Image 1 (cartoon, one colour):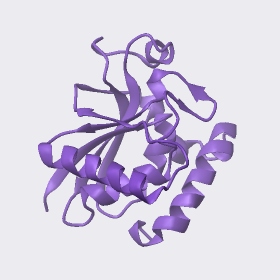
Image 2 (cartoon, one colour; image 1 turned 180 degrees about the vertical axis):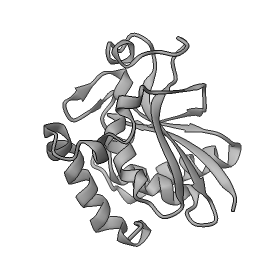
Image 3 (cartoon, helix red, strand yellow; image 1 turned 60 degrees about the horizontal axis):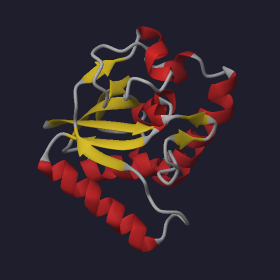
Length: 178
């Protein structure tokens, strides 16, 4: 087994976390914050948009069962990479689309996939996903971890997360743990 780490931001971390928790080869998913200068920010601070942090997930995965490019393909399925600093009603730099790479190989894979998706015209608008070196990651408070599984009937989960999971099941069924 070869563990690797991916750090991704695609809007609210509850949405992205829920998608990655069900993937074969994913060992752990932690919601948190990255990309800003303030150490140990709180959810309330990050929500103001003033800390520079993005809501992200940090994924630990077995790259012999799921590779980094496939993780990124899932990432691009469950969020809109063409909206600058926004995902749906979530607006602000804390909701930006970002890939924080942990190695030069990850950087190259991310840039290659973005170029491929652009050439294929998958979206009508340009991809604005930031690709940057992984900064310090700060885990979010416990109440934000595994949020969808603990609150599946909550309004936000039903209206926003459930449709993303349905799209994930439709496009990537073979990657899901049964």
